[in-house]
Length: 212
Image (cartoon, rainbow, N blue to C red):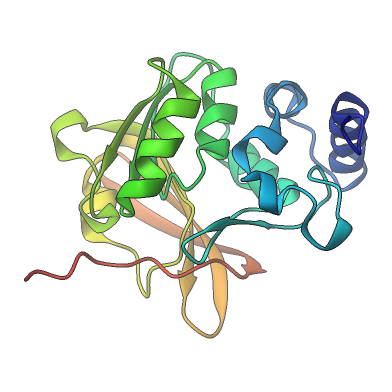
């Protein structure tokens, strides 16, 4: 028997997100449907006795985490997505954020550098989400351009390849930095890049593939 009523926990999570200022109904509805606990290994679902729908990150193995619900909701709300748009995610991890995007009705492409995570996430997500193992710094050039890009790990600086893969009026949100990180919103207007600093955050670092 489950220790938690996951449906109730999910509803409580959505209520908390609203109290924390999330207003985008498309985001809230999607997060109210996606079963976050299924995107966390059983060993991590009740990490230190926690609720898998609590507002904190949870471990998924390989030194990675699934981000806290507020940060997921906040980043997606800032992108101002609409159904039918083409979105690239960097850092698939467990597949949770990609699942929320899919539930929002966008066309999802996601890249994960750790092959084991990519394989597991792909099984969870099914055929509606496009996923591959790769170096996120390179994006997914074969499928560009994208209306929006969301990055779930922190590079030292904004990767040029990702800005180049945005549509002429595309937007991106990503954490940038090492010791001190901050969300940065990138807006591409008629080919001109504008940067907007946002919340201070803490994400796992973004890695390059090491060539042998």
